[in-house]
Amino acid sequence: MDLKSYFQFSKYHTSYRQETLAGITTFLTMAYIIVVNPAILEAAGIPKGPSMTATILSAAFGTLIMGVYAKRPFAIAPYMGENAFIAFTVVKVLGYSWQIVLGAIFIAGVLFTVLTLLKVRGWMADSLPRSLKYSFAVGIGLFLTFIGMNQTGIVCLGVAGAPVSLGNLSHASVQLAILGFFIIVWLMIKRIHGAIIIGIIVTTVLSILWGITPAPQSWISLPPSPAPILGQLDIAGALSLKNLSVVLIIFVMAFVDTVGTLIGLSARGNLLDETDNLPQIERPMLADALANLIAPVLGTTTTGAYIESAAGIEEGGHTGFTAVVVAGLFLLALFFSPVLTIVPPHAYGTALMVIGIFMISPITKIDFTDYTELIPAFLTITLMVFTFNIGVGLTAGLIAYPLLKTLTNRHREVPAGLWMFAALGLLFYIFYPYK
Image 1 (cartoon, rainbow, N blue to C red):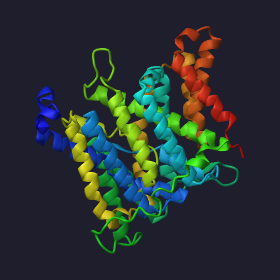
Image 2: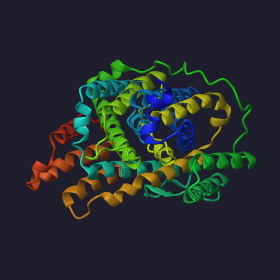
Image 3: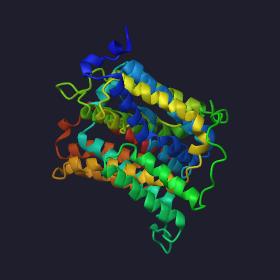
C-alpha cells in the first residue's frame, strides 16, 4: 500500500502538495510553542535549553502518532494554559517541585491511556455541557492574556492596595511589546499565515537592533542536551495523598482541553459524521494519551491537540500526512536552538496575549438567558483569572453546574459522567494545599 492509499488521499480529494502546504502552515502558526513553553517553564525551575529540546521532541512524537496511527491532521504539543498553571500556580505559588508535577502528568497519561482503551473517555466527553466547554476556553484565554501582559511589562503588580496596575510605558521593552502585539494582530487581520511567529521574530530582531537583547553567538548547533531533565519525574511523590489534588486537576484540565479541541477542529474540517461526532475518536485520544506518557519523561508538561491545527485544515489538510509534515518540521527545529532561545519576554509575551484573543471568542456561545448555564460558566471564567489558578475555576464550574441543575429540579439534564467530574472537583478542594 502506498502513502496515498494509506492516508486516503482520494477520499478527501487531496494531494501531497496540498497536505504539505497544510503541514507547513500549521507548523508556522504554532511554532511559537518552541520558544514560549520553555520560557514559561523556566519560571518553574526547568532549564530553558533542555526544556526546548523536550518540547520539540514531545511535539514531534505526539504529532507523528496522530498522523500515522490516528490519521488526523491535528498537531500535538505541550499545552498552553497547563504549562502556565504548572509554572506560576502549582510550582511558584503552591510550592510543589517540578519533578512531582511531571510525575502527576505521567500518572494522568496512564489514566488517559487506560480510559481511552476502555472507551470510558469518549463516554465522559459526551457528558460535558457546551457552556462549560466554552467557559473553560474563555477562562484559560484570559489567564494567558494576564500572564502575557505581565511578562511584557504592560501590566505589573499594583501598589497602594491595588492588585495590579499599568506598567511603565516609557521602557523600551514595553513599547516594543506593544508594537509587536499590533504587528501580530495586523498580520492576523490581513489573514497572513504564521502571524504569531512572524510577530515574535520581528519583535526579537528589533529588540536586538535596539540593544535590548544580545544577538545569538551562532545560528545553527546541535540541540541542547535534555539530560538535566530527562527522566526526572517523581511518580512516587505525585502518588502521595497530599499531592492528589495536583494529579486530579491536571487530569481534568487535560481531558477537557483535548476533547474540546478535537471536536472543534473536526467540525472546522468537516470531519464529523451526521450525528456531529468524530468517528473513531478513540484513535486521536490514544495518540494524545501516549504523548502524555512521553512528555513528562522527556521533561515537559501536558501535551494535546492544538487549535492552531485549524490553520492547516483551512489550507486543505484533511489527512494524517499533514501531521507527519508538522512532526518533521519540529525535528528540523532542533538544530536552531541558538536563535530560538534568545527570544525575550516582551516578544513571546505578546503571543500569549494574542492566544487569549483566539480563546475568548466562544463566550458568545454561552446561553446568557439560562442562569443554570450562565452562572457555572461565570464562576469558571472569573475564578480562573481572579485566583490566578485555572484549576480553581475549572472545578468550580464542574461542581456548580450539576448543583444548580439539581436545586432547580432539572437534575435529569445532568449526565452521569458529569457527576463523576463533580466528584473529582470536590476531591480537588478537599485535598487542595491551602496556604
